[in-house]
Image (cartoon, rainbow over the protein chains, first blue to last red):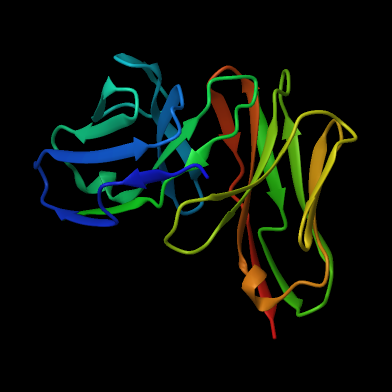
Length: 113
Length: 109
């Protein structure tokens, strides 16, 4: 069974704070992804990583950065949180083989005040 | 432009009333179509992956089918615990996944 875990289920932060969201997968997957999910907009890709220390921008990378120092761990960083970053953040991983199903974590609901 | 459209946006069924959810897609080259179930406040839970037209997969009361332009998620004799949002996604290329906005299903006892 694939397991993707996220460090927090709920977070409340103040505008301007630096925020770290962590994601860990236990299936030795090559690829990891960060999405945000907002009502009516669906899932939007922020960043993805296809290997350790490798990262690529998704559709909405502005205001975010990522880090992947170990294969199993992918961190999303909000350098200076803003109210428009209030959202549900979802981490996913996929094997990196021909079978490319993404498996998602439970999500982190972030509120920026 | 690559695009995924799900319909209907919301669906209410009586327990036992079978129905189908639709996922229409326009992509330059399909490398996988995925169905997920999402409960409120939780991450999407994987249901099915389909790769080629004509392919079908089943799991309990759910059956997913795929044509060259759309996929259907058939729900047979649904129960209240099937209430959730069902998401469809397509993979048109390496690392790129496009998600629909989902169908909110409510099954009434």
